[in-house]
Amino acid sequence: MPTYKPAPVEFVSGDGCYLTDTEGRRYLDFLSGIAVTSLGHAHPAIRDAVREQVGKLLHVSNLFSTGLNEEVAATIDRLIGDGTPLGGKVFYTNSGAESNECAIKLARRYGGPGRHVVVSAYGSFHGRTLATLHATGQPAKHEPFAPLPEGFRHVAYGEIEALDRALDSSVVTAVLLECIEGEGGVVVPPDGYLREVRALCDERNILMMLDEVQTGLGRTGRWFAFQYEDILPDVVTLAKALGNGMPVGACWARDEVASAFAAGDHGTTYGGQPLAMSAVRATLATMMAIDAPSLARARGEHLRTRGVTIDGVRSIRGKGLLLAAVLEEGIDATAVVGRALELGLVLNSPVPGVIRLAPPLIVSDAEIDEAVSLLSEAIASVRG
Image (cartoon, rainbow, N blue to C red):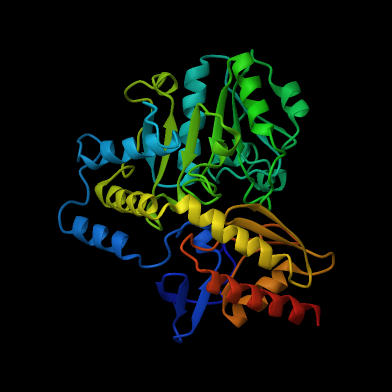
């Protein structure tokens, strides 16, 4: 179906930070499948884990246990606690949208009859199901699919006063926010904003739900971006990097909140199936072994330092290895992305005037230097 523009390149293989097309040409990947392949392409640990699992067991449904689910849930719980087990619970999904759908349903169950409203931010992106689309703060995306499910409000991102006015605790059950708005252009809120959100939610007995689908698992330089604010949300959604390319997601919640769900309230045929769990277990083990957050901080600083020297780049924003090059006024970011691809560099532009930089966390300084050189050439070519 014509939901995407025609693909300009057909990739057939990958290795580390590089992709190869049908003609045998190599491309430096600074998009990572939109912050997914954080360990790079064809990582041997994930490859071997999936191969082994394919020969053992693929699917039995969630009516039975396979042993992997509990082990992986414990690891997720510990990473959300920044090394300390929290005793939370996990529901497995197949995508970020499904993880947020689970969070929204959980919030409604927790709030009870009459208390069903979820407040999110303008510029956010939470998915494309009907509910997560309405949670997404981009009205232009709503219009073709109206009427959308009721029970959603939007406020300006990063403005605590606007959120304060929207939190009528008689009807609002949860706040759903990204720690950094990735699809909105890698927008970082003011320091302390999430702490203030946490305080408001505590004051009014409203759930604080954070969408870490794009920012989670080391991408920003911490295991989860909310850890920069030294807070703990009630619900955390994740996906993307969780399986390094395997379609898998998860919704974590504090035990008290998770207990709002009863048997039969929510379900999924494929969520948490053995093949996905084998990829997740290998991915998380590898991330912990290489200290992925430290890599993201170090390489991100190098990319930021080099990126701001590019002629035509006004600024670099973001954290860790989720960065955006904000171009000078008048430079067509889409054209730059197209030219960069011709030169052998994979990027994308989530919003006009902005280019997202999200390479694998294993990227080297030399590969960053190569990418900066190619991006500089692409911008100069478009300006010329």
